[in-house]
Length: 434
Image (cartoon, rainbow, N blue to C red; front, side):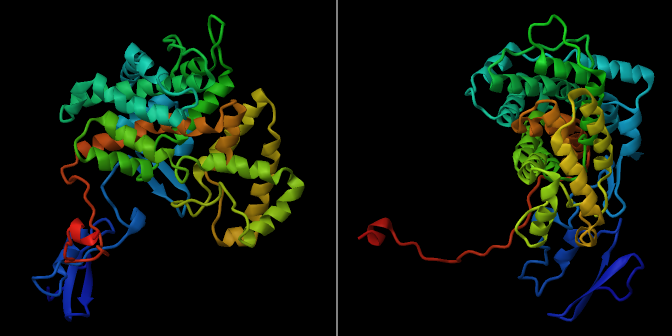
């Protein structure tokens, strides 16, 4: 208890005891441990916060990604996502996220060279993936194979060594498209395609996905660019569910492959990575533009769900959605128009003008158009989260690297509020069952 409150502090009065406490405010937050001093008496535990889903709890300090949901701003290391998507490429953005600054020409060339020549995986990894059932979900295969990489690189456990961390980061960014493409080919019963070091990162991924009998696979540059942009848009997004999983598992000081496989597991869930598939199902169920008014009425009445609108963070137009909408147009120039796009455009137009949705700040998010693009590439819905994971890998690794070097971090161990029975008397089975 203090007599004079500092300007940057929160004054709290505990009405149970009448005592007043001053809690310091730093970066618009208070330290949860400072609430621990508020207690009924020395025999009782101190005050804690209850925050399911971390709705209003900061778990770390980070300089990787900045989001202002009310204004629709997304920045990687201070650079607006709009500029990065238009003027950069995925590997340069990956370097920015991991290293904290844009590369020089020499740094970029070295970075690209390292990643290009680490795209191959051990042949035993190939055998491991071939052991999955013919109908194994690609995301489950990716999660398992990334976790398995920790056994191929046991030195990855030495996370305190900066050079070692760099090597594992390069390996994972390089090998993720290979593992993702092989999981795709496995589901189709097709032979796995090895990386082509003559191709760029995204073009090589498309080659491993779709190459058949041709000696050299050449993808349309517009498709390469569109997929590269999608990877950029998904590269990081602050402390989302999968990033939190990477940080939480990484806090035990495990190797980065195990931590990232935990992130893949979180992304696997329909509430995180599966939203664009839900958008496709919704558009197909609507069927035509003529059915949109009835669907909108169903949403208002609570009988339908408007998928791809609204976001946990954004209370404005998701900046990624504007970029991805332009990418969709570029892709359809190559693949031909998807009739679902006409439904999506009309649905967006109506929703943005309807007071019901405007009042609730329901704007299109990144998932609203991404599923249409993936479908145009002829990806089955089960591959959508794999594509998401490949793009998100640099962000996961940047966050993991930041965690490892953050001296404030401790092993994740949240409090709980116990609601069960106490001090029961045990009755032996011989008496309970007689």
